[in-house]
Image (cartoon, rainbow, N blue to C red):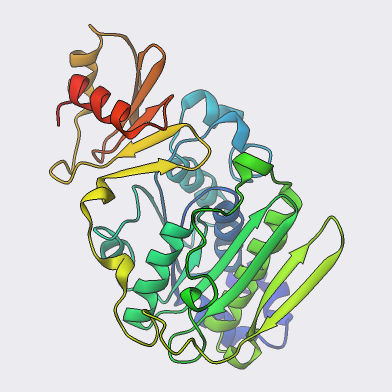
Length: 338
């Protein structure tokens, strides 16, 4: 079966049968199952990577379908979590790969659990807060980090390898506050495919033992204007708090980690530390007297105009319709209880 399924890949001289075997023995983590993540997972599973785990905190919406390649209109109707919908699709693509889709949030509290025993981490996120978290974890634990980011028709890709390259913080000390997002300036699916495919290719080089072939630079691309630029690696920043001073600030658990704003979504996520599991059937009974409730096996939507609260079985709650933390806290306290 392997010979026929992967025959064209095995014919490529830099992979061959030995490289294919190495892919089958590899384990990867993809953080985020949105635009980049769906392309990354598709490549990993089709290439025959032995174990593919991905984690995502969100559910499928109609606006995702333009660029998030593993989802369809039925997923939107069912309000499926992205990790669940992606796992269903990928299992039909390659039954020989061990696929684990997790509905959850990668934070300083959870990243060690999700990244346990993986060989590398692929960036499918849409924010620098999570990227810095991945960066710090990877450099602390000596794991390659395959970064990618895209917005509009522009994208960047780089591979960060502990003890061999600078880290993400050497290039972006604080990129979270002013960076453009897909929700503010838009994005075309073409750039997503290009950047995620570059990430996947560099990861395949690593997994098949072709480490010398990994590009030693940050690649920046603008597809609309047909521009590309390579930023070659220099030495790490002398005072970089992650790769030089070994402080890893993103791994420190802060009180505010319970609350996060979903960029451009008019939504605040609340992650209570004391709740690891939420019985959605029980919460449906509690909330149906106070407003409209819809439930599937993975999440519950509670509408109390003009807001919507989405409860997940892992304990998280999304408060939609506000970016005001005080409002979200008030609604959570009123209907869920702090």
